[in-house]
Image (cartoon, rainbow over all chains, first blue to last red; front, side, top):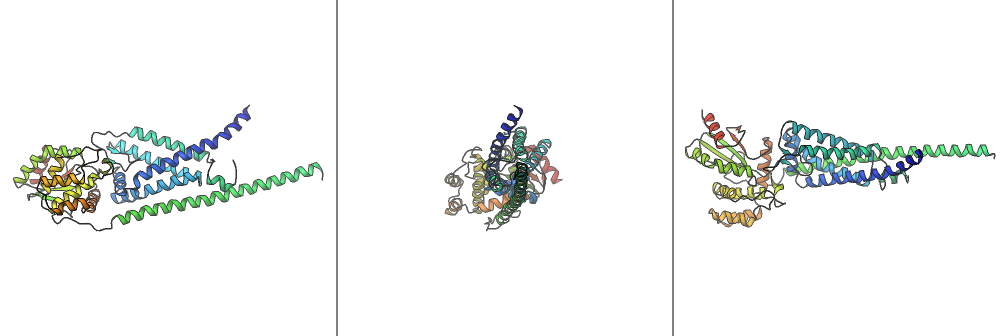
Length: 164
Length: 241
């Protein structure tokens, strides 16, 4: 029975990982897509965290959306899944740290996670707790992929020549 | 061939196949990882280039603009009050309602020079019509015709709600007419977005000064903690000595 169960779970993991991979790909594509149209606003969103000079924020704000879209596409096709997932996890940790620091300093900003954020609209409260929880969820998706990078419908699988 | 020998050769073949498969996995892992790093690097470069290109392009600065071409001045007093506002920002409107009388008084008494800096940081709150940029650009067009103060006032009096489409270009022109901006020059500037790049540049300079929200008010360079008429008066008196 024990072996049967482990065989079954071995068969299930690639599917679970596939869902995680496609989900994370969607997260990056949406997050990047929403920022890429207005890089000046993206720079202001980074600057609103007040963690670096505006010149540095400009660079980060301009590069970040393109990195996000690239990561999304790489995860979508499933290339070097473990590495792209690890980079995704690292970015999520950085984002979470940024939000925690903004929260701790009492800044009233939009996290700029799924928008080119910045200062909040009038009467809006920052929802740092929710932002962090959501990013932790994404971190978990990345974690699953680092742990079990084998997925269905991936370029990795095709190149490795395995039907697993 | 004995059964034992066949088993052994099958096993040997299996081991070789296994090794080959492992070798292939390793090669694939290395090269796909290299590909990923290259793709991410290129993506970063694209972002970098887009950023560098942003600063190019011609900017038409209204002739009346002061302070590095970012502001329009009212009055000529010794103390400088800088006011950074987005026409879409409700807190800016509240500040205007509460403080415009005080500001006028200070200007009339010859105590202050008020420099209005229109900035566009709230474009994301107008359903893609970029009202912040359009209104800031229109105010520059009004300044070019010598009517900034009047237009500034009428824009705040007619402020659209955050999350709405903002005022249409047509409405911006109509409001201009109501304060005497009847020339075709003004209407054309609004319709063609002649001062949009100016608005983007003024906003950029606002960020470079490390301001992140509106309204931001400084008195001789000192930022007010909470923009209110009382704080403003106090700061001006202190600055005047």
